[in-house]
Length: 214
Image 1: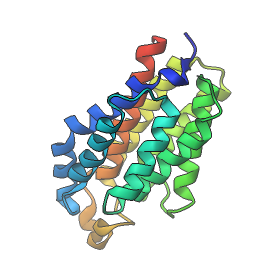
Image 2 (image 1 turned 90 degrees about the vertical axis):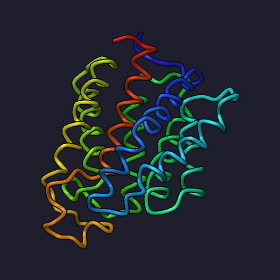
Image 3 (image 1 turned 120 degrees about the horizontal axis):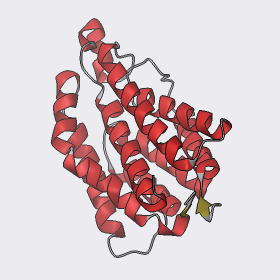
């Protein structure tokens, strides 16, 4: 299969919830090294609330992304609620027109999420934020689309790019957030936002791959 029905995307959403729940302690551990140490707790709170909200609901992929974004934006504290909320709402709104999620549709959805985020934050790749995962992941998908790759291969490329981007943050100096106050002392530690973003992107990819094969 080269596409997933948008209306059949609930398992992908639940995969995202599961990824955060299973890694909540790790996310807080990473965050605690140069931040407040509450990233895992806040992310788990939001995603668990979302999981409970959709448990008995018939909901599609992009509708769910929009609902998740609204929930995170309005109910989760710190900077990550608005940041992820904006990203997911951008993705959801861009994808509501698609009945089928193929590579072209997914590329548009992912690009819209990144664009929405960059409308409200100044961070770029290299600044030790979640954009170090999201930016390269988006680039990989856009390049796969331009090259005529199939959807499954593009998703695998996205995962690899997100993981490489996440790992790159270990040697970067933080430019934004509380950790930016540490200057050079922020080097040598992964960015918690980049870690959680990578987990989410990989969960999305795995959830879609489970439906389309590959």
